[in-house]
Length: 476
Image (cartoon, rainbow, N blue to C red; front, side, top):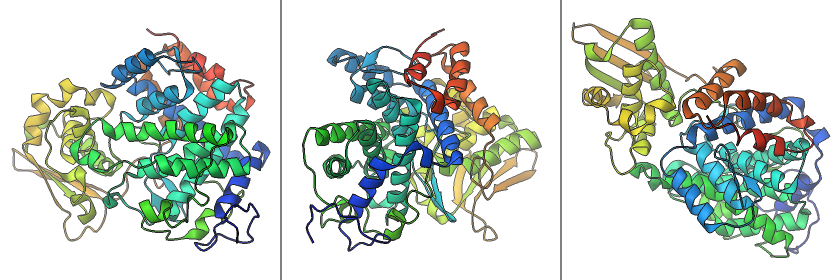
């Protein structure tokens, strides 16, 4: 069988079928907006709005302004808008920066779901800015942007769910999974045909990766590996459009994605089963700006403060009970403040629980360096420890406070707020968006409110430049 053939195979994918990528490429290039289910279109709009809010909330995080200064110094064609800050950069630079801002607080929508299986992911933080930047640069409509975004998210979900992958392998899944989504988005918006799209994926595989060591070390590179897939996807698609060739089977080749980065493909059928009939998209909207594993423990801490009147000055000891899997995760390592305090705090059970107990809430204003270094929080952290869950608990997270008056109060959560079993409502997602606008001050309240209406009728827009106009104006 010729590797260069674009004949479509019959039936579901298999690891022995080198033409799965051709079937996927054909689907990506030919599926019209009208074939997309209304529920998936609506969910995609909410992902767009959530990521925009997170970009506003992350616009001023340390490192981001410095990156903006660097990209402006480099210059280039003004093709796509920098969210919040305003001004235009080359499309791949705008996508990089907007993605990094959206991920900076670890607050954006995440997680694919398939028939009871949850796959942690940070995909929309890259695909939304990629879609927005390319669609703006090309003067495309909201329907064109939504089509590319939904198809790209769907592919990223299929690759993620089919991969025999976990965080302990070493490569960062953001750098190896997200590029499938961004490359699909860019290829569709740039008008590539199916063979060109396959080549774009073959080129992209040569530019993926990253290391999970970033999380252990709490360094800025955590968000860089979110941004580079946005650049990678655009570059791969632009090169393929101009005749560059990539490896013929980027998924199943001897040295393709599954072999190099995923320890194989655990379920090849996911790649094409229901292709064009059901669409994967992230659906866990996060209530707290920190790593998702911390959220159940944060829920416990907030409940202790709210429902039991627990206050930091009354606490003798805090015991954070975790599953065996979470105990070996970087989130459970002893909290320390190093070169990038935000990275240390956002991925720490001790910091997030203690900050929530001190403030009775946890949002982006609780991750400034002043708050992270505050005596109130750090004195409480010194009185906290992580332990295995009690034997009667086999899942979830538990927080027990032992008070100075001798009382002991415990809260346990099996699932966190925001999980598909307890999802955030649309009103709660809007409140999260508005809070980030208010705290950041990067766009005016009036522009932010108008943006809500524009995004929720995205399929009616003739030019997505309307979004970027609102998302870059009205600085207070």
